[in-house]
Amino acid sequence: MESNENILEVNHLKINFNTYAGTVKAIRDVSFNLKKGETLAIVGESGSGKTVTTRSIMGLLAANSEVAGGDIQFHGKDILKMSQKELEQLRGAQIAQIFQDPMTSLDPTMRIGRQIAEPLMVHKGMKKDKAMAQALEMMKLVGITDAEQRINDYPHQFSGGMRQRIVIAIALINYPEILIADEPTTALDVTIQAQILDLMRELQNKISTSIIFITHDLGVVAGMADRVAVMYAGKIVEYGTVDEIFYNPKHPYTWGLLSSMPTLDTNGEELPSIPGTPPDLLDPPAGDAFAARNAYALKIDTEQEPPFFKVSDTHYAATWLLHPDAPKVTPPEQILERQEQFAKMQKDLAQQGHHVEEEEEKQ
Image (cartoon, rainbow, N blue to C red; front, side, top):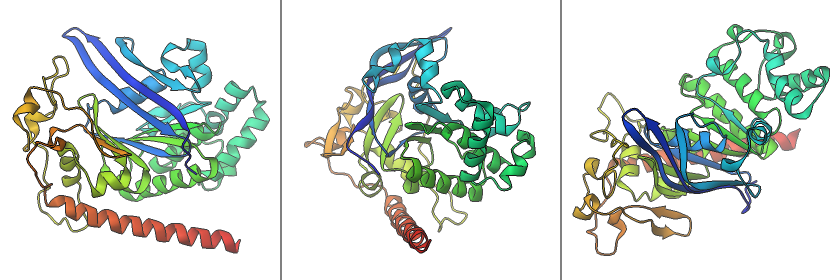
């Protein structure tokens, strides 16, 4: 599925917001790439810059924002320099997005069949009858039961999980090259969340879409992503394969996120949390922005921003703890528990995949 070809490249992106209080430096030199057919997860607390980064890829930045530097390359073109017309042709056709809340993503006055068919009519000039027939097929593909009977229903007639399936159908109807999923399961209960994640994995296998998955939940990442970028205070602080981030995390912020993840054995005990709050990006601190919340902070962390240190060819972390002269520290003990949970999850997913392959062979 996955190839070595970069389908998207974000280079040294800097985005500011002009507010009455001053200039908020929301994105501070972010770079990453996305390969064809892979899932890249961007994780971090609220306010870390995940959504602003991906909105810039869609050309959906707020009116009070300004790009202070960098570029976003898609098929040799810089998205940040595209005209409004070019962006309209891009959105929904080549790059599509699933938003957090399915109810606010759907038009309550329009039948869902028409909402799913509309991107085909807009981007491909398809006649309504043909577009509606494809919408019906997509409804079946995303698992909407009794699709023929329900194609003319309105959004309020569906459950939250089914509405999110409709939103996914709208996003995928044009078979986009990139799908941005912005916390697509946050508003759903755990059982429905698992179904939606399984559905996205299944659909990705069928149409080879590359996915950027935004979440604050590392548990979701474990079963979904190929690579992970950890964001904090408008910067990426660590990135690597999903195995590297779970089995060999290097940044204290990543340790904090992993430690605060509940396990199946968590029973009424209080989960560890990261103390303090993220810094004010009106006036970002000198040095490492995480220093004030970091129990392992060194003196240099408050003075000088750490560069990326190479852990492997695919794994980098921006922490002074990786400097050859830094004292050796061990991650918190909760990390080992999360690694055991992750190993079990991987084993379960592998068994599920094996059963699916067996079923397909029988058919």
